[in-house]
Length: 408
Ligand code: PMP
Ligand code: GLN
Image (cartoon, rainbow, N blue to C red; front, side, top):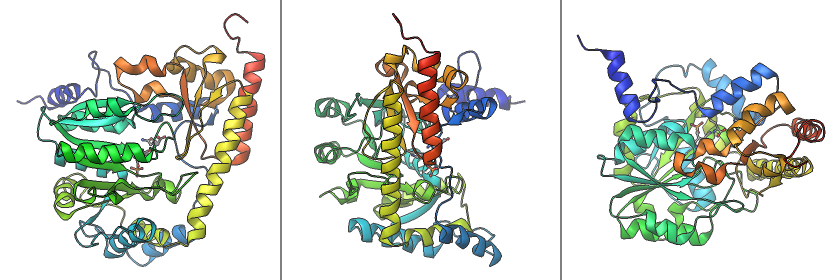
């Protein structure tokens, strides 16, 4: 008889998802949120807001349930949301995807990323280029797809890639260049030079550009520039986003992909066997959100910019060195001056020592590069202002009371 659990274990081990000792690990976000719950610490780890998003969007979901939108939606997504995504791309970026053929609704950006890489990667010769530190699902999905992950480092404090290192990473084996802009975990927004070079390299090596733009509306020096808008880019770019961050509905998992029809069809071919469909009542609600007025979109960026500043000032007062993010939920701080030598240990200890949870940047890096991020910690700014102020006060008190920097 076939040993199904054993087969599963071999497959997952091959993809690097379970350790040599057979251990499985929750994601760093799940681990740190559990630690926050256990210790009662303020959770500036996992990136989710602690306030509800726009009332119109929440109400639209309730209304959709009441109106009976409770069965499978169409495979590509409901027409209203496909059209709302197309309108959104036209309104903000001057892109004009055909809603019937060039847009696909997915179960969050996470499924869009997974289906895209599974669709594009043929075998172990194929390479996927990512910027490191990277969102954790990128390496996991590249491994599940059987591709080789090639990373381009982003370095403290501005986290812009070096163009020569980028050029060296992309070659004829590159199947996809995966670009997360604005970037998690660093908060970097890539420069025009970097974006142009990505397009040039993709053209030269016939690679597909896959963008993860879930923080597209959370930019502080705006406007956001999708790579798909650059000359020559549209035909080889799949643009991914989702409603989670923009509308503070991270639990709804409504995402989308747009791009040329043949590439979108390839993603659909995989997606239909992952979730098939999801979120029948949430899809019309996200369509309402995407059509909200300009004031809403300006408002969320302004609010988060103010929170970024509050968090940055608080972290500085507590003794951290702080990088200034240009977008996203996140701020990276260097805890070296507080005696940190291992960000993982520092973050596992922080809830008990200071009553605050944060995420070590090493969790977003390949083992060989972790030392470059050994003292860097990611804090989420997407929390109420009073929560950020309390977290900063706790960190400052812990430094004054308990943390003894080496040599002090
Ligand atoms: N990409 C990045 C960069 C993220 O930070 C996240 C976390 N929200 C996701 C993708 C996943 O998005 P979703 O919740 O829509 O699946
Ligand atoms: N995107 C969120 C973050 O970076 C976490 C999502 C998750 O828990 N997988 O914090």
